[in-house]
Image (cartoon, rainbow, N blue to C red; front, top):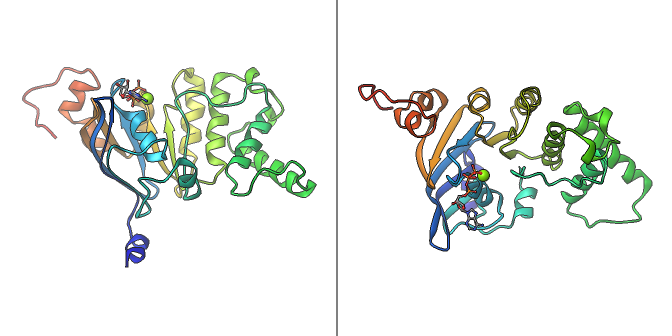
Length: 263
Ligand SMILES: Nc1ncnc2c1ncn2[C@@H]1O[C@H](COP(=O)(O)OP(=O)(O)OP(=O)(O)O)[C@@H](O)[C@H]1O
Ligand SMILES: [Mg+2]
């Protein structure tokens, strides 16, 4: 019966009353969210609002102090990160996690290796090595980095490094991808490339995005959740958030018109 319920869940991800305390600090408090397959969801809010902590609980970096995380209807609250990857969840980090002394393609191959259930084999067959190489090259083509495959990561621009990270997150063929500030530190031109790469991810992939760049948020997201001090301030379709007086006051720093109707 439980399995039948799981199979019929209309949501790929559900957060049910999740919270996290760090030594008395309530970093995330009673967050509820239901995400449909293919949806683009942005999580926004000021520094320290709890956005990355929320991602850490979604991806299984650590379990929540309260509440539940459901993936495709299945309770994964206690499941570690790597097992959630096998179930179709992938993420990028706020801080770069690449190997700077390795080439672009070596980083992607290592990423592909890391998503395999089979253990690393040093003396793998040439055929398997060739197919890994081809797979890595294919992933790099999608973000127009195939020509830079032999460059060392440390010699790439920061924008290209962030694109390699996006490629790595795609290596596990995820159904849900969580991007933590993909645009942070990018120039306007790099930012444009990143936005297009995210928009090109395809409708079969659900995207959760943490971002301070409000232009990116409104261009990419259909649904937006606003956090402040760990709590949900608003959670709604993009247009409703755009017109939400409280969000304008708290997040966008705009003067609110007290006579305007609250959304
Ligand atoms: N591992 C941890 N141990 C203790 N406190 C933590 C830990 N991780 C986060 N915090 C605290 O929890 C709160 C929320 O932090 P979090 O990193 O989730 O915010 P954020 O919304 O991602 O902020 P930013 O926009 O600056 O990245 C902050 O007060 C932070 O100092
Ligand atoms: Mg953060």
